[in-house]
Image 1: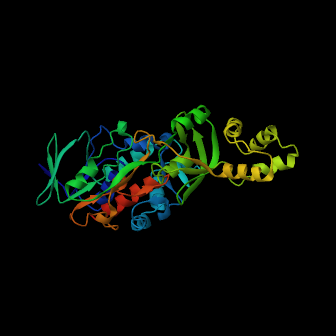
Image 2 (image 1 turned 90 degrees about the vertical axis):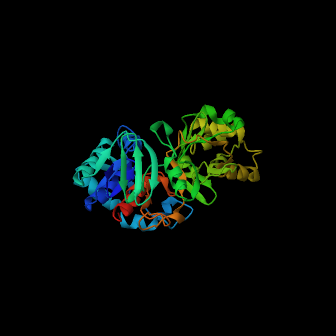
Image 3 (image 1 turned 180 degrees about the vertical axis):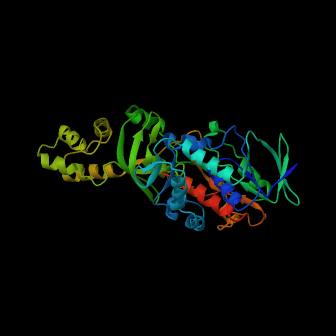
Length: 386
């Protein structure tokens, strides 16, 4: 049996940052990771360059049953704080678009940085450490195949259930339930959407076609690129709106944001399908313009019919059959109910010494580095309070 001041379960972004923050304060920290190496999701993020934060991070960029919960942690550990760490380690980075920061070279640099900080903070890391049991008496006891560890504090940073091929499981949710905490039903988020068979027949062969749209679900809307796939829709606009889409509902898509295709038709003088196609080509990729006219032609060439054609172009209602599931989801929405946790420390209100941080909590960021910033911020909140 080995004793520590705190045990952190999970060697991803949140777990590593929490261990670093606590270790810097002289706490004896053990980090247990069930995989053979730490930071596996960090490594594949951002196309291998790790979109490690977003300059424009605000609470409005996060989805939760309690939209105010993330405010405290985000205010106390900001993008500037993580950028300072990146710069301390001399990692070159750049802003891509919309405040998204990426490594110039490789996500490996972020993992190397976190490993270095763990060493400096005297954090002990145990890999291939499959937890078989967690119990609590006078302290938390965590059993693995190798041994049993004990500590007065336990931090759960085991992530969601997205990308199961990377080893994701529902362990964190099960542990929360074991201690009587409520779970907001998990669901795939930042995930491509799938067509019904009829729509797949109409649009599936447009796979690879990309265009800027405004995609809306309820009161939430995003203006970014949309991509047709063989099975449905993807691209940043769709991934963003997928977090807000509810099964059975329709999405509304503006295919020509700010455009007026029918004005060109009216100006052409000759109101024909050829004129309409030429006008649409100014706003849509050629293949999409042709397909749109095939299935959504003006019912006539009157001004009233052209008005209706224009409206439909800006309000395409498409009802997805579902999502591509956890296999393709970048994150998991839902998780440990924030009502169970302190927003200042991430500690469970009814179970002293038990903390939940990162993706396992019901806080889900938009696409573009926000989920990493939540991982760093929630981890810092817990690490500083241990």
